[in-house]
Image (cartoon, rainbow, N blue to C red):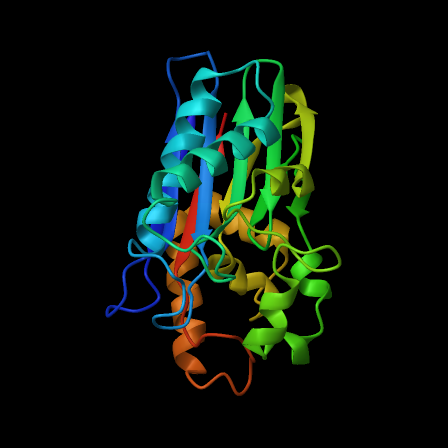
Length: 260
């Protein structure tokens, strides 16, 4: 088994709101991967006294514990229970009805000798490579379907957040787990997989430096930090987002590479 991880904040003045963990309980028994990208709210607008890093750590901890220890639960069931636990942990102190209450995108993978399970919610990405080198990107593209001009208006985006016809994130409602993109792949059909937050996926999706197969090959050969370094170089070359339009000039970026 090979596991490589790199993560970096988009700004030195803000904490990294991504969160990741890989648990491999013992040799040969499989493991689990969790990658979260916290949704950054406008200043003083989320109604939560804790903030996004607290939320992603709580949610990520619950996801890791349950996916590693409760093999009888599906990943969607685990996500639902983890959202419920996290909401309960700050329900008495925070306004969970606020549309910008802390929330996160989710990538999960869980594997054993027979099967690789996956779950993706919102705009982070899971790459799955087969033994013949083909790479499949597992994505939840509902946010991409929202017109760009709508996404530029915070109020309009909030109206579509966790709403039918819009897009879904892990926030307060356990029922959104049923909206996640899920699936299973025979372990014999998986050589490696990569979890990416959208800050790292910019190398493909924004800067068009290569396709998903190129992205996975780069991470395998040079490591996750190399991908983040290349994203940072591309961001720095276009700091105002003129050549490559994007919501933030720089974004938190996380990359996890696993060979089961």
